[in-house]
Image (cartoon, rainbow, N blue to C red; front, side):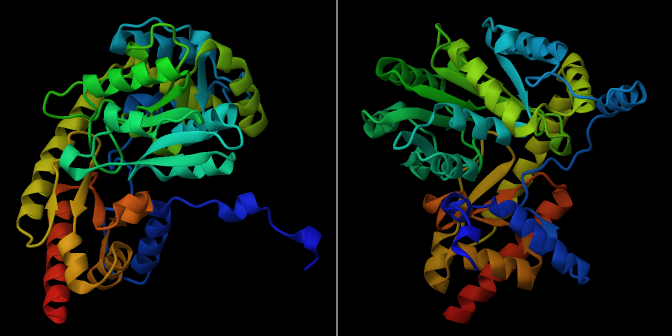
Length: 401
């Protein structure tokens, strides 16, 4: 092959989200007739509420099939600004709201807008893999904050402060967090914002799970503590709360000085989000939170089932998740007894026991010795999947004994 026909180092170094790779393998095994229980993918198993789907159908029938402005239709952007005010008690200029093709694009374009070659960005590890991949893609230096189980996997302001340097450009936070289900306290969030303001750096806040929270806990956003609105980039979307993963709609609320350059990049990437999906998202916001609350109530019951089943397995433990729909299961005793890394154990679980889970290192190097379990599935499947996992661990550790 001619040297001119090579592949860019940027493309070669980019990583894919492992959950989708595991899903693909699980689907292959199902096609071969094997029984697979899916606890790997971070997707609500609920259908999109009917009133949202009906709004999209009406929009299609009315001819809403054309381009929209790059940052989205004004009605949706205004509704997002209004909901933000209701949630956090802060005024947001709707012109600083940009609708994106999923929250993943929002993460990507945020980093594209602010990261220069050599800039450091602090992010949680374990954490959503798009953070580290995006930082690297734009020439930044990932600075992982290693989350600790003894801190319930929270990202404390003290730990953040210890990583800040004169090269730090941004701090990424995610609460409730994927994959650990941790929730940051008011003090955590406020402290991180104070660090950002004093050092002149950004906080990128991924709030995609903000409504999926338990035990009467409250979600806090950096935007509540950033009076000038100069430091906070807020990312959210419709995928998790409204079971709209396939609709591909997220959004960003930016400081005013970032809005125009960020929207230029969005224009280059996707021109605009899907027109009829935006109409559906507008209807989702108009419909309030009743459907969201019903889903969260069911997640809470499933969480209890997961906790119960995990407690029955020798050599494993789990910090009870406070938000999102993931359990981050500590299997270090199993990895030690079997001499198998978590990635290998996850493969064995899938191929030999028919349960698809995500190995902890798919969420960062600090995830070794853990498995991520998604309880966005029926109680029956959750119980059966964890029972299969328990049987696997008993058989594997007995074999090594």
